[in-house]
Image (cartoon, rainbow, N blue to C red):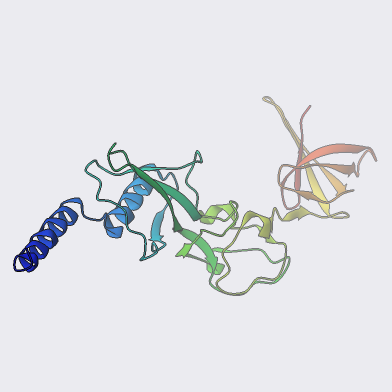
Length: 233
């Protein structure tokens, strides 16, 4: 018995090693890839995105799953920022489930300022440029179309490189109180133009009060452009 002890120890070690190798451990890389594939399939965000999965603890040792790994979430939508994704093994003999986290960054082509601009200044095409920027932490009102801010008036001073949002601009005042205006009235068979004085400020398509210089009456008229308002009869 004593002489054969080393041989028995060797055989026992071989049996243990074989059993351990057969079961194996689930690689952390396979879990990461499952998370990334789930995000790619379920993301519903515009533009490009980048996913960085938070590394799992090196001490985490999960049995190798003989079934395809399944990812899941506890929320309805995947949003930019930190997201939590669950991964589970549905093998009845080695069933396990863990939660992982990932950082999801989104990138879009947005409108930025190519030169500084002062408060109250009118934005022209020369002020604007299109660039790809990270939008993960931006509010939803950032601008992606030049025409959404071109010819608008700024609400504050802005520096070069600013990503423009709708809160940065307002419609410019086309007619100011006291401005002389032409009051235009049109019908299918005739048109009349009269002189007037604006009683209130107005932006495009806004209804303002205007004094008819001929009659002295104060009427409501719609701003068409600088110096021109229209009245419907």
